[in-house]
Amino acid sequence: TLELQLTPSLVLLRSTLERLQEKDSDCIFISPVNLSEVPDYLEFVSEPMDFSTMREKLEAHKYCSVADLEADFNLMVSNCLRYNSSDTVFHKAAMQLKEVGGAILRHAQSQALSAG
Ligand SMILES: CCOC(=O)c1ccc2c(c1)NC(=O)[C@@H](C)N2
Image (cartoon, helix red, strand yellow):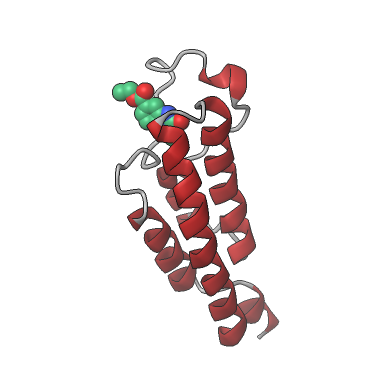
């Protein structure tokens, strides 16, 4: 049916999120930035995002496409690039994750199309 074709399977979205999270080897994106440990974070970041929040949204059927998942991934990476200066491990990790994550998401997009 059209509905089945339009929304990529939860299985594809789940496996894509897991592949993205595997690239966060230092686990800096695994949970929301702790606002008591980083008190000025919301002065720079209006919409925090992290992998655990993405997982909750996925299981709540809030992602209708790979593009929806990609939008939150890009939000998470851009938040990190904005808050952390370029000479920090966080900034460098975000640049690396952006590159490898982009390739994972492009592959997921083609999987969604071929499954559709
Ligand atoms: C124990 C204190 O943890 C942090 O200060 C901290 C921990 C994790 C972080 C982070 C800060 N900043 C970030 O931009 C995102 C990517 N991750």
